[in-house]
Length: 229
Image 1 (cartoon, one colour):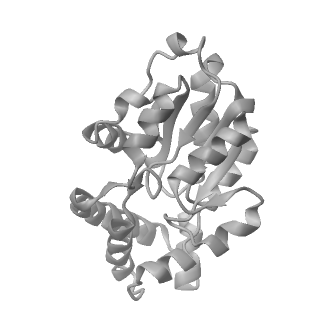
Image 2: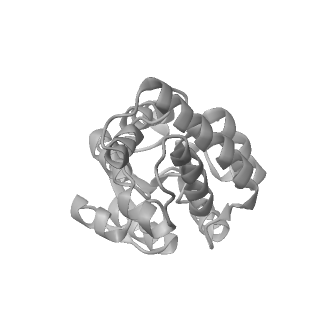
């Protein structure tokens, strides 16, 4: 969702690009439930949350390849993706924000800083989801995935930052997410990142990436402020 960022440019110093699923939105129970529904279409045994977090990786087809012992066929990939999204939509109603999100966003906005959302969740579903939680007012831009499912974030982040244009200083921009793919996208875009352990990846899977890893979003915001200055 593009917004008029021009009005913000004069006062923007530090900017956060927030991930949505597994970061601002606490949806891992829904993700695992939806993944298990997808697994059933190709005969993969269901996983617990802990098992999922230990195994999960992006791009998602590679995740399925490891679980299946081979790359899924196009028909299998479509069945997996469809089953996941049908079940996720069913379970979404039970999802809430990560504790403390509202206060963190309020505080960041009140300090005269800016923030945006970039997610690999489908754009047409992300925008109303963010709005339903009453968060849209905090963000200068909300972007979801517009291309095919299962890809990497780097390309989407490049487009997101280009759209923000002069309203943000990339030297003072930090991406906060929960996946290795977030850190890799930030590195490719020339911005910093902080990774949160409460989402899709275990701490062990994030620790080797060379970026700060934290256990709460309050810590993530504090570190982002330090990194961006």
